[in-house]
Image (cartoon, rainbow, N blue to C red):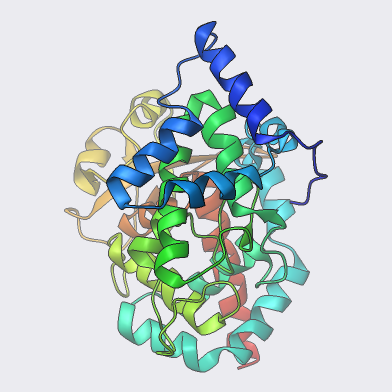
Length: 331
């Protein structure tokens, strides 16, 4: 998503506005930019003068705030699917597989994640690296950390992680670009995810998720692996639900915490091959013809750890299936 830039605000005016907002108690904020800088100095031994000069160059992007509460995942499934699973994205996925075959094979062998799942995530996130975002990461995270009170603490944590990354990796904090929410690189990792899950897959001494497809592929696969991906196990399967049991089943927690046998006792009509003690969850998706029901397994839940949306996870799965089918015809 590409957005126009907002007018420039000086850091001193920004800090003054923040202090006024706090004094007027218009919203609760964990800490101010000044306090954030102090924390980075005391907790991580940053040079205070360095950070002060750095944030003087950071612009606040008001246009970011306008899109934060309008996520694409809120659309009904049939609209969401149409936007993401297109013939162009499927064909590009096939070409990406052929171009990056060695890295994908290596990632599947090491982490157990099918190549098509990794490809689909990269395809949805950045169109296979073609659109990694044009917002300076530090400006996105500063804007959201100090102007988006609903999630201020989260984005301040991401800003903290980002500054640590730039020090650890020897990067200029003003250079890396990403999404309006601060997601970075070919696989769109948030800074905390980068620090935990990004890998130097090509062994060149750098975790380069911005321009190295090999590192990006390995990092996405490692992320799913670390979140519990089960090698060669099912992801999701269509099912039926007894009409009088729909509300009860959909009220269950959105995690695979229930065995198929337990779900069947509550009204699930499932005739798959998985054993009765397999852990699963119920997924409902709105189609143009009504609501469709699916049984999601641990691997489906793992995909939602990348983006906590059932629409997103289903789009990844179905795009992966389309790409895998095309690859089987054109290896």
